Amino acid sequence: MAEVAVAAYAVGEVIETTAQVGVAAYLISKPTMPLKATFTQIATSSEDKTRLSLCRADHTLSVVGDKAFIFGGETASGKVASNDIHVVNLGSKDKPEPDYSIIPAVPDVGDGKVPVPRKKHAACAFNVCVAVFGGIGEDNSVIDEDSTVWLYNTSKCAWETLKPANTTASAPKARSDASLFNNHNNLVLYGGRDADGTALHDVWCFDYVENTWTQQPDAPVSTPNAAVADGFLHIITGADNMSSDVHSLQLPAKGKDKDLEQHSWQTVPFPTNPLTPGPRPRIGGGLIHVTTGYGRNYLTYLFGARQPSGAEPSSTEKPPTASNEPTYWSDIWTYQIPSSSPEAKVTTSLSDVIKPAKIKDKIRNALGYDSGEHSWCEVDVLPPADLDAVAGKVHPGPRGFFGCDVMEDGRTLVMWGGVNAKGEKEGDGWTIKLE
Image (tube, rainbow, N blue to C red; front, top):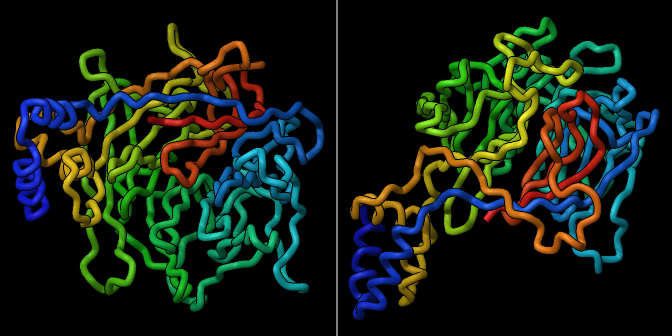
């Protein structure tokens, strides 16, 4: 409550004129949603029959610095992609670096190993590396690597491994379709499917310093829709078209005693109907944490395929369709999650005082305004600034099973490939800037 008292005092001290009161009322009452999205096509590739083809699905895209690293997946010819890394430069065109390059798989040390080709694996950016776990190999079976995490070091352009220090300790089993995240420089692994195809809902944290896996409370359900934001693991589930749930688990804090009592899962239900709009249940979509600054946090839920009841997520078959129902979605939704705590600073500017989202939300609640927390809103898509200068498509269109991540600014998404509404694999890349 101290931060609220300080904010209220600062606002009271600064507001001295009717004009300032008007500015304050506007800033406090201004809604936090909907966000607006601008699409830009950054690259496109033509379909070919080789395993290097970038027309693919069930792959991963991880952003490290100003580059997107594409790994694995299944190509348009139905083959598992090679274990080469595809790098797309997202930075300034003025930089003397190639816009696109292919880097063959080489080990960090002379006698080291490299990951075998795979699809439906989990990956995330991890410091200067891309971390990879699990997946399905060329024989169409789940790859068992004794809970090993592969690290592609982007500064060395080479592969290394993270293996548990104690091979007899508990560790996650082999799996595909899992989710992997970086949480304060430690890894979080959630869910997926085991070698028998059974859906998993376990949660594991890997300590990068101690090289140990620690199991966290199991999630209430298994779902491919997961994201980590501000120290929480969030998953979204939907059993029907009228309601869904957001489940959240607070993860162990960095440097805290691992023997402390674990946190429990919290569930927030939300309706999805014409009176209370929300995203329809889906598979093969993207769920990514974004921030618009000053601690304002959202889960961005984009695209994906219509979720058939009880079906296993698959990019090889089109979801069964019903009358007036699309098979793939092209919409984007944001779910506003609690704001991050602001950093303490001295200011005499009214706008600076009430810009930190957490303080702003508490003032809103005190004044009777809706902060927007725990609510959904569909993103408004803006047309390109210069339609005459745009060549080709202006929107990816409906699709699922693509690779996606967020850039360092926290608000620009990058996506590549996937399966379109015709069941064809795409080979284009896009940025989606949210504001």
